Length: 167
Image (cartoon, rainbow, N blue to C red; front, side):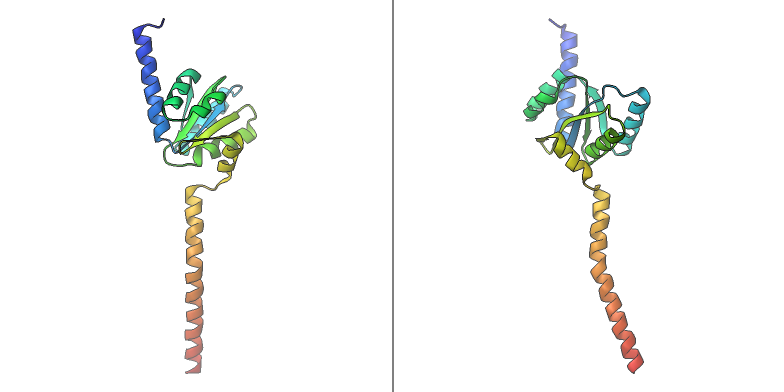
């Protein structure tokens, strides 16, 4: 039987994980086994740049936290070495960074993930990874909105010049 101090420590870790999972818009679970220290450092830097929180987690404690937030379906992927990458601001960021990194580092294995309280498969994680970032989508939308206005301005300018020539 674990001591009271150890038990309290584990309860605090579970409470922290519950809070993190509830705040997360999306998360990805991966097996980091086989990564070198340099590769892990590179991965952590990329995740930090994207605003993604990345930690190595104990499966049993993560499973307790997942049960509390309604992510029971994560239980089958919580085996072996497990890393958890979550973002509270961007649905795409954890998937994009980990899937891109896994392409050049075969040792990193994506196990699954979740988006807005729903557990998703590895294939769905890859679909999320292929979605452009929020900033790219906004810039595309702004470009789409500006194009008709620009065309109208050019058409009105051409009409004005034609009227000047006729006058």
